Length: 491
Image (cartoon, rainbow, N blue to C red; front, side):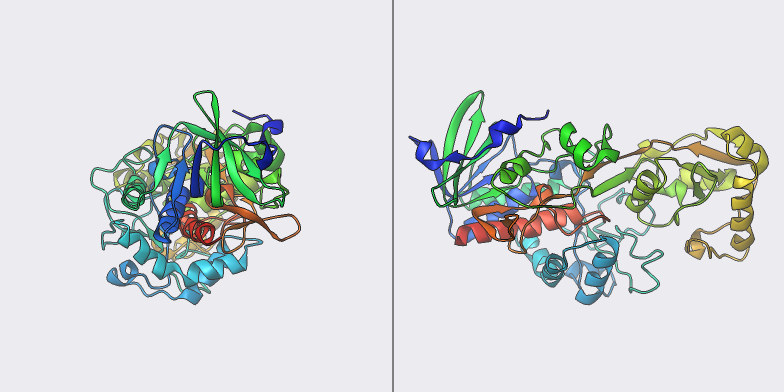
């Protein structure tokens, strides 16, 4: 799973006696960033070769729900009746994806968002002009637009006009979390477009290290296929797009230890190889501790109750983006979470439509009173009772002044009352990686670009610096993948 650090040392071009393949632009990885880079480079007239470690295109993107974070007034937003501006999109992303966001990247991303939507449509990515407004990780049907970052919830909605920006490709008979996810209908059109443009691909080929000339410019890669080493010359540039380091145990322990033993929404090929190869050339890193955290409970349930920690205290407004709930649970509350919900609310939530039936759990404890429930749960005496008392007092008039849950989801907790034990129900993937410019150049620790080397996707530090919104990975992977391909073709 974890590769030897010694093998990522760069190879000198002078040592290469024969190039087995040549191309203008060589792309490592055929997920969303690699596919976007390949299309963009080919559209600039470059001869492109993609090396993919597995037996086919797709990567984690093909198995994802498929959200692409876009805004600023896309045709889909307009068709669904929502107004959005570039400035509002920038304000939200800088507030929600921090601290420490790369403002130059976010500005570029938001300024180019509508154009990127049109580019995806031109590549054949389909979007249905319909909005899904129910709580959930993703729409259960083929609706094309959803809130995916907590834009319409506290604390953001009070100061930044909310607009849904989760754009999901239309797909019939889709299945959550598998090869029939919405991400497939993002990847298939992109790879079809790449093929039509003459992009070549070699599968079961694992890039091992970079090749540099005497000036330090990256001029190729060394890869292996079925145990045989081969070399590929890149006449203009190399694009790294091989995913995160979520499955590199050593790197996770070093940089993002809260995720040890709990990778999710990633694939085993996400071993950080590209990061290590670029590091061996002096590449800089950013936000290596940042993680997206999934919370393994159906939002239709927890939005109707209250989430409490091991001290019996609420810690987040339950109507926000579920990824924010996951981060707050794992990072701020030591993975301790319980859902407290009464019988009526539980039954209502279980009857509501969802794309994640597998995240609906049976109650762990059921009692007539909160005091009895508190004792059954083993919480300090009086803690849960005080929490529910305060919540119910304000819920009686439809308010939540403590955490700001919207009135439509605020209702007093009655009897019988239950709790679902959600301790440890989190998992996620890493968000940090190579520091790149807004043009997707890999930056040396000196701040200068490494000549001939570009990168995009989850092997880089993208628009997410700490926080997250669903669609940020496929969004910045495809957007900056385009820029990587363009920059490499022009190098």
